[in-house]
Amino acid sequence: MTAVTPHLMLAVGTAVIGSLQFGYNTGVINAPQNTIESFYNETWSSRFSEPISQSALTALWSVSVAIFSVGGMLGSFSVGLFVNRFGRRNSMLVANALAFIAAAFMGFSKLAASFEMLIVGRFIVGIYSGLSTGFVPMYVEEISPTSLRGALGTLHQLGVVIGILVAQIFGLESIMGNASLWPLLLGFTLVPAILQCALLPFCPESPRYLLINCNEESKACSVLMKLRGADEVNEDIREMREESQKMMREKKVTMAELFRSPVYRQPMMVAIMLQLSQQLSGINAVFYYSTGIFERAGVAQPVYATIGAGVVNTAFTVVSLFVVERMGRRPLHLSRSDGDGGVSRFPDRCHGITGRCPMFPPVHYVEGR
Image 1: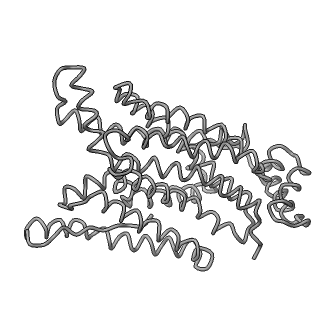
Image 2 (image 1 turned 90 degrees about the horizontal axis):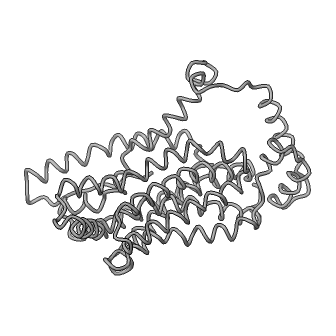
């Protein structure tokens, strides 16, 4: 197997900071829910001289959570515009400007007595996260040797789940999930952004981008030699040349043609179904609302139950690092999907048993990403 060089690990580790940011901002809004809702109520009361209604509070909270996904959708659609214009590495650098802006909006929302600033900040950091979910896997895949591509590609998801877990821990009331420090909790996204900006100049541009997009073969060779720790990179260059020739022969297609043409339809449907299988598993809803879910289920310490779910999520992502190359992508995904189908029957049944028989304590499940 190809050796993992210091240059490769620096580049991969720096890129995965963007994945950690996505995970952090996915989970950070969860633990301090009650504290932030109190801020919404206080702000509303000071403006309108009456407490906010429960329906309005629920609507505001739902918007605060969901606007992150709306921003993420917009960001993901913009990935191609960035990577083809600025390159992979520089796109990550440019996108951090959004993280700085979002951190300022969220961090100063309490000082400005403005829940609108918090919502706008969540939207902006959602755009940043949507961009990162495109930049990071693309960059990691293009700088990784073929034999390590699966394992190193999994680091993107590991960064996401570690980010979620860090957000859950920082969200404890004894750390930053309290009435005085929750703005720092939300604004903490500034710290990884600064770290990534400091490290990215020491990371190489994607050799694939240099060769195919910029036609700079000498720079691509130099980058590959550093990443591989070897003087012989002709095989990598040959593969990229072949890919470039194939791309030149391919005509540009519209979005409609992706679904109409039999050449593109099957790969397109596979890509869509892979994403849907993860999103429709319900795991994102768990990490957005788990504190409220566990609280309504009667758990005495819902925040700690949420952290427990994050620990399980992280542990099984680590396991996937060691089995993805051995077992293959497809068998692992199929076995996970079968597990989803079986496990997803438990919550409703457990809820029904708990409702009919008060002597049964609430039973919960955690589903891996």
